Amino acid sequence: MPGGRPRAFDPDTALDRALEVFWRQGYEGTSMADLTAAMGINRTSLYATFGNKEQLFHQALDRYVTSPGAFAAEALEAPTARAVVERLLLGTIELTTGPHTPHGCLSVNSVHACAPDSAPVRQEVIARRMAGEAALRRRFEQAADLPADCDPQVLARLVHTLTDGIAVQAASGHTREQLRQAADLALRTLFRLSGCG
Image (cartoon, rainbow, N blue to C red; front, side):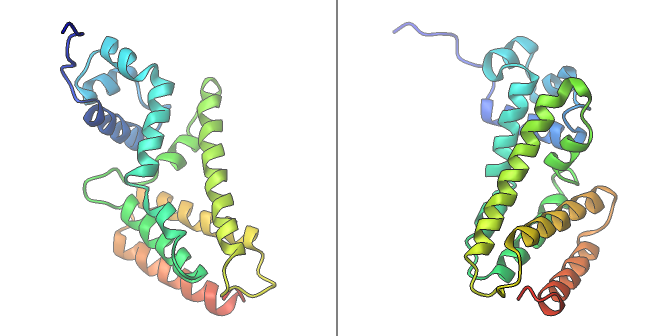
């Protein structure tokens, strides 16, 4: 049975390597040469399998959300609002300070470092982030442990602000223990003093 020549590389492994480069360097800071070197393929194979750089980045974002960042969706299944927030904060710390992954956050890096030519990429990342915040707001709207005067939208925005801050601090060199201390204080303050639980 005739068929095409088999690929000399594993696309999943290549995509994981591309994700790591984008994560470490951001979209704008990553060149095609960086990608082909990390993925172990030439440009022709990259274009044939993944499309152009922007298309590859979208696939890397999908992989980021469903693999290292999967904790975010899983956190929404926690039984209480406090547990949701705790899992998001601690999960972000684990993600952004891992010993085998780049420090910081792929989406935060890519939103803040995009030239005008890369505006579509920036808008895609922003849209994904807004969708995540909307999902968190909907989860808070269903939470039985939040008082009636706690605005779910404002709380969701605050939690995203905290997770973004963790990512920035991790990229700046703060340790996992330091960030866990900050997260613990944020949880105790938020759910004891602010009236949100």
